[in-house]
Image 1 (cartoon, rainbow, N blue to C red):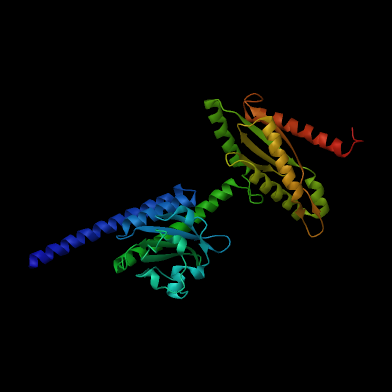
Image 2 (cartoon, rainbow, N blue to C red):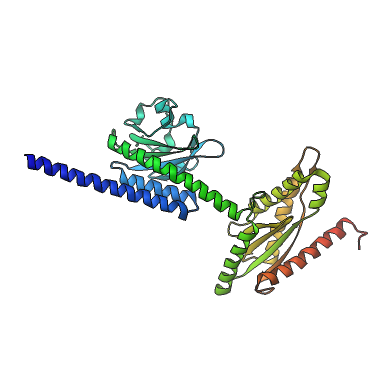
Length: 357
């Protein structure tokens, strides 16, 4: 009997050691992904998959992240209906963990029977549209800088599916995840600073040139075509002198936001410096460029910059050049695009001032 008991303890010790090793490997994978991943959803998917795989009895799960409106929306999930969950968002006060703890959210919580929580309305999170399929859950708050930045849910279709050991594991995971997510935020901020213009949220000049080299090499290899576009904001100096530099900043922001919303996701748009912006449009014709420019101008005309003293529309001039017919290097393309932009600018001046020769 003593031998059998000793053997059982030995086997249990091996199982616990193997489980701990698996947990540490999962945390290592997540930590490594923090630096190698720029898309937060990819990181959240990895976290959720690792946790569901590790916790016995877990059938489905989700990670809800606080959005800019202060509501919690499902960033990633496993096992739910995509259509039902995609627009689901709730305030913190309506979440399972808030209602279960009465708002005292400090650690992971096991809810053995979700249906016992009063006034809980989470129908979009059902697995089966006909019934409440989730019976129990572990709710894991992700607390960053003193606030609940997100909530990780590990769910089961069974009542009382999770043990105190599962809760201890999730608390260990939570502490590691919070550190990992803080590092991820710092990494993303570094990436943003290195790639984006802080005023306009367009790419900056250095990153644009990196992208241009990538596009150029790809286009040379696969015989693809693209167009280099240069934009110049009209009369920005006059706006600065008349209304102040804050108004000038609003002009730059308005132009950048409008243009970024009108171009394709595959195109590249950057602030080149001062009042100039640059873009790469893929596989596009003269007529399509003119149509796109017209759309941007129309949108700017009906959405003027509003200041405390006046309202005014943003106008701009542009020029373009096609690879490879009008240049096979950045300098060649820029020269052609720049010349066209100044022709365009002079034409606009003549149209607005007929007496000007």
